[in-house]
Image 1: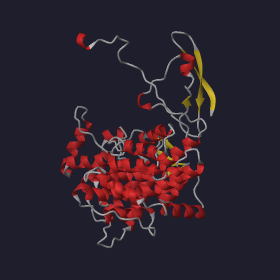
Image 2: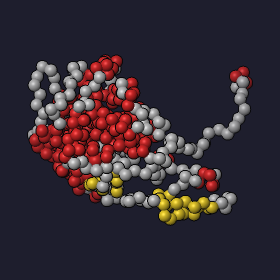
Image 3: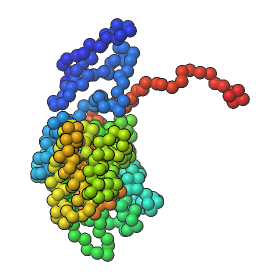
Image 4: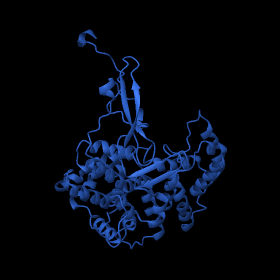
Length: 431
């Protein structure tokens, strides 16, 4: 909603422009600069877009100063405590919590779409045996449009809904198959009598030769982690999905770009970096020394899993998952495991250290999620695929919201050119 305006005056020409102030229902207002190039002949400059609003969205709200995260207006702590991942997925996609009948229909639809086409399963055999699961996810998801091209009309609301449900249903099956391929085990078909997270754990860990029983504690912890990772506003991977989707490409191609962006260690790979850091520290006795290294600006060591780009307070997701982390460690009797003992000691000392408290470098969701995944027996190279499974909900919702926006245009950032000015071509024999 635009109600007030800033006046911008060009320092050389004296030309003035009225820049409307755009306000939402919550959060920081924005200045609408869309007409500034036409009026003033200039662009705005915002590297990494950290001060730029790229769109209007009604899905997720973050207040980084106060540690608030809400999906469609519902605080994430309430959803994590009282809801399930698929109920939250419905909320994020459709904007309202479902009635019991709506949830039953949605869960049934997701459950019935978990299988992969047999030809698609054969695609995995084309990857090298040691390919990273994220590489396989990127390729396999990108290929889905070749199997479902009859329902990829981005202007058809029914096609958009089919895509979103199909994508949420199939991404756990794809991720589990990628893992099985990487370790040389046969792929496990989904089982429709299990809930979403239990089904995924079974596809991940079961083998045909043995009976596999899903641990309900593991399934519940995974369900909460998926809720906490389901969406996070205009982060790097979501912005990538929106930018790719603005071209009118098929939705599976757009989601594959989000998976590729998520693979970056500064984004979805952060919890993997936490485990690597703990390995580098090695022992509880080394924690004080490494904390001093983290304080030294000239030391390359960085404390991974602490602080956040958006949250300037305690990460609300970390507050929730911390309790589950300790619960899982206790359930599996891992309090005395060297790695987990090291992580808990690092957490304790950092939370008591004035240096980290003053800078609000609290443990974030990546710190605890990596520990939980490790406790559940999930290998490190599967940490980012776990993130991708959860975030697929947010990607699908943002892609759908963008397609419904009548003002949507192809994304086209500009630049400040710093290269050579015009020069004449020099023949090869004169260089």
